[in-house]
Amino acid sequence: GEDGALYIPEAVQAGAFGGIPATLGQPMQELIDRYALLTDPDIYEGGRMIALEDGAFRQVWILTDALTEEFGHSVVQGIRADRLNFHGLCTGDTTIDLWRERLGAPDTTLTVDEARAESWRIVPGTSDYYTFGDYRLRLHADESGVLRSVFLTR
Image 1 (cartoon, rainbow, N blue to C red):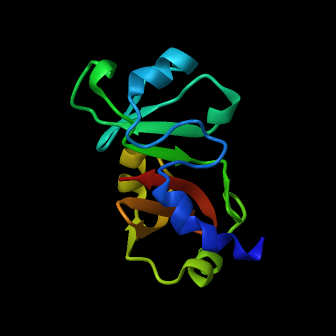
Image 2: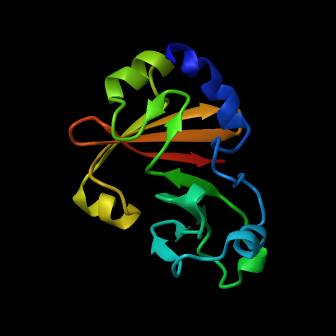
């Protein structure tokens, strides 16, 4: 409920989103062996977005590096969810004003234009970045200020 925001720093530092069975730093091969690839990895600016075959990964992508062809050496560098309720922050529902009210001012805010949005495979809008320990939470709103994508990275 309202106090969900209290759990966000702790949850972010666990390096995972509840309900999505992947953790930052986990070997990529482990996930692929368990869940299989849904489609070929999509290249985005900064790495690869990987879709896995499981209900838990619907509208969720695992982010990894672009450096190597071999999954064997890759680890989970990020998790992106476009369908998520993260301690009361809900994609398609929560507004930028509400999350700023709950989490305070972000460390960094970035305006994402068409070109940048395309290279990152997201909608144009605004990204707020929050750092908790060694982890970073990125909340991305569309141009109307509604949460569309949540990223967890190290």
